[in-house]
Amino acid sequence: MTNDIGARVGAAVRGMPPGYFALVMATGIVSVGMNLIGALPLSFVLLVVCAAAYAVLVVLTLWRFVAYRSAFVGDLHDPHRGFQFFTFVAGTNVLAARLAVEGWYGAATVLLGIAGVAWLLLGYAVPWFAVLGNEVRPALPAANGTWFIWVVASQSMAVVAASLEPVSGDARSLLAVLAILSWSVGLFLYGAAGVFVTLRLMLYEIRPENLDPPYWVSMGACAITVLAGARIVEMADTPMVNATRGLVAGVSVLFWAFATWLIPVLIAVGVWRHAWKRVPLRYEATMWSIAFPVGMYAVAGIYLGQADELPLVGQIGAVSLWVALAVWLTVFVAMARQPFRTGGLPREWQRRQRVAR
Picture (cartoon, rainbow, N blue to C red):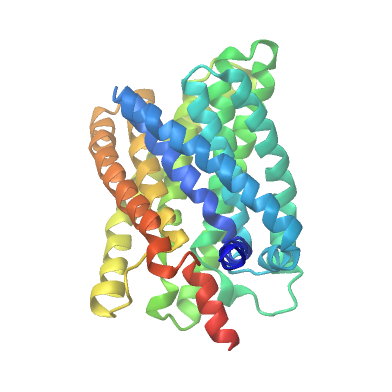
């Protein structure tokens, strides 16, 4: 019995998707939003869940790297899954941003440092291993919604840098440069990812299974670009901020508009996929790729409404936040029920085993 449980846990760790830190991203951003609207007890509960999930996932990821390194490295070389590693960067920064809200600036600064190192390393390693250095050519058919997570990771650096800037003393100018730099990099990455994914959709066959939840990250990447821009607009005067504040404010409004336009498109794709094409709607780790963008859209709207004095945008964000909470609860309950439905093994691992047989 003990051996059987150990085998199941080991199999679950071996098959754990690298994008599971999207759970931390989704929980943290909904917690931030609840704090903004004054739902403080709920916000704190979500913070505890966020921190606990982060700690558990860090341990499981290290375990996977040590004990199942071939699976870990295989994901890094897989263009379908490699960009999911950026959820670690984004999840670390979302938790840092939430801790900064509580005034725990030391812990937030440490997490920003960890995320910054990971952002730099993964920013060069993932595109090379998963795309440029991959022996499978062409790589374009593998482009999917997870490629937008690179954008989210970059913009999350800007969000935390801008959040810590007011309390950083002599480091304020450095954080201002980091915020503008990572925000700008994120803009160019969004354009690149958008081109690659659009070309994949136009040039290759599209099956219902291909349009999975990570395509929602295209909207989430827009939303976090808005949030980062709104936080930059609120930063104190520095040469870098003064030179870009007007541009950042205008671009943020444009990205909010595009994110708003994307939502009906993504909902329609989901209806087509599940209601029309009968793809089963069941829990996968990628479902957190829906919860995070909805939460980020809500928080971004609230912040943008404050920073650019756009009350309608702020009101839309506040209403969207309750939708985000409902989505988060739905996905969380589905995740909690999964072990009872699958015997403790992730569905993706089970699918791989069937294919191998």
